[in-house]
Image 1: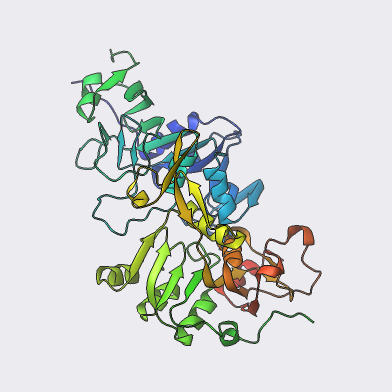
Image 2 (image 1 turned 30 degrees about the vertical axis):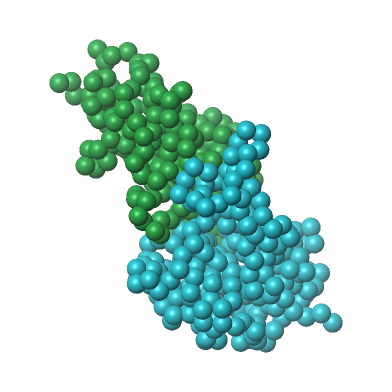
Amino acid sequence: MIAYKSLSRKDLAARIARDIPEGWYVNLGIGIPTLVADAIPAGREVILHSENGILGFGPAPAPDAIDPWLINAGKQHVTLNPGGSFFHHADSFAIIRGGHLDLCVLGAFEVAANGDLANWATSAQDSAPAVGGAMDLAVGTPRVWVATEHTTRDGAPKLVERCAYPLTAPGVVNRVYTNLAVIDVRDGHFVVTEMVAGLTRDALQAQTGVELMFEVPEYA
Amino acid sequence: MINKEVRDIADALSGIEDGQVVMVGGFGSVGQPDALIEGLIERGARDLTIVANNAGAGRIGLAKLMEAGRVRKIICSFPRSAGSVVFEELFRAGKLELEIVPQGTLAERIRAAGAGIPGFYTATTVGTLLARGKESRVFDGRTYVLEQALHADVALVEAWRTDRMGNCIYRESGRNFNAVMAMAARTTVVQSCGMVAAGVLDSEAIVTPGIFVDRIVVVPETANARIAEAGAA
């Protein structure tokens, strides 16, 4: 068996950041997506949006420079970049639901080959799941990328034929970045466009709940 | 002379009765009118419906109001967060009714109420559990669900600076739901971090014009204000 090394959460965030061009307006969800903020290459202007009414927030402040009035949607302290702006919640979600963002990067419990996203409730019996802005982002943003570990901690696949968990939105995911591969969602199929070095097609397929298509050469 | 400033918190909250719908601004603790929530606990009104993004954390603020048994129902987008212990206890015991609303739909339902719009269509929730029982309609080949305006008897908001006319500006991410809720209630009560003379606020930059505001009570000594005071006017 050929050895391969899966990406750390930080490296996965950096891999995603590499694909975000200058000038895009981007919303980052909680978890791995949040780490993308710190991974955007120096000098590349990407404008980050936060649900609670911020465009253009920057990295976390030094511990002695915390501004209690300035948090992101994950309720972490942030800073404001030059040219940043504040607005109220209805305008913030007009930005999201009006299709004005270029991209959102979200976490997921499951993604299906048809682009269905499940990332807000782990069971239909859970009567008090926290939806937050997930459904608005998934539906309103023209590009939805998912950042996730390829499998659950127990090794169960998160990329599946059909989601078992309650949907956040049907048919919205364009691309999935995992710790093992970059996978496009196209016409109801997962298409692998990149794999970590040393990983074989069979090994990736074995950790995936639906048949993959490959646009990468078999690892030699 | 118009002067919307009232003497104290009890005056600011007078008229809030059992069974009313109360909007509470803030996102997490930022922009949350903590002194007004404390005042609401003291006032003792019961059977309240609370509209807020979160369902409180720890045992202070909204969580304390719920723990005191004053809340019948909460309408929010994100009930579960770190430290939402009181919500968990009450909800599991069947003592609290919950309506989960996606954050954007919540903001827009509040805005619609303030703007005199009874309902609107949105693509958010289509094809999910949260669309169950909702009327839907197709526009240009895409399905949308009907959502209704969300009105309140009272909105409790926190502003950074206010004047006697009721004009408000907010501070950074403290604006959040406050500016929208201020439009949507029969009575809007503002907890202000500081009053300035009429004419001092830049008319080009007023976020909530005074017409939306009924009462203002100044509470300069919030933790937020103390820390933030150094860096801002």
